[in-house]
Length: 154
Image (cartoon, rainbow, N blue to C red; front, side, top):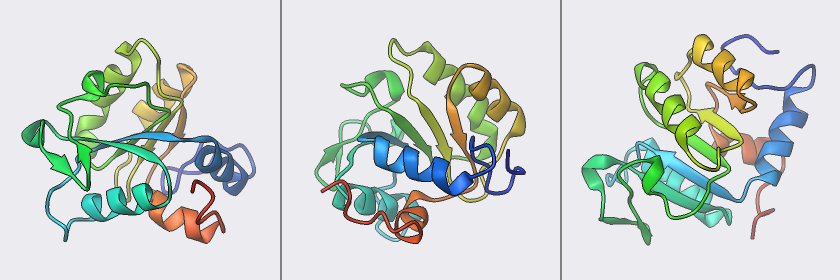
């Protein structure tokens, strides 16, 4: 297991685990989506959509609005299809509640992914104990091109 910085449920080869996650995922809930094009969450939303993922933006303050052609949902339970990955653009203090939401879904996401600077080792251990892979303190919009995966979901 990697240390908290750049953590991935990966054993000894975190890049292999990241490749499996990013190539095996088709549906993503992006928590903390922003309507502001200058915000990283808006930019990553656009990147993941352009990369061919089905991305569902989640932000209770924007629920019902449209971002980049996608309807924004108030919470994970409001997303109209099961998602495989939850990508978190929220402060680390929100992770316990986010994990609880994930665990309450009828079909649990397979991956909890948190963005740069978002780390909670306790939540990571709880998610892993529940069978959810964890990637913390990384950005898929950085990892996809770094791993040579750009264009694989088109």
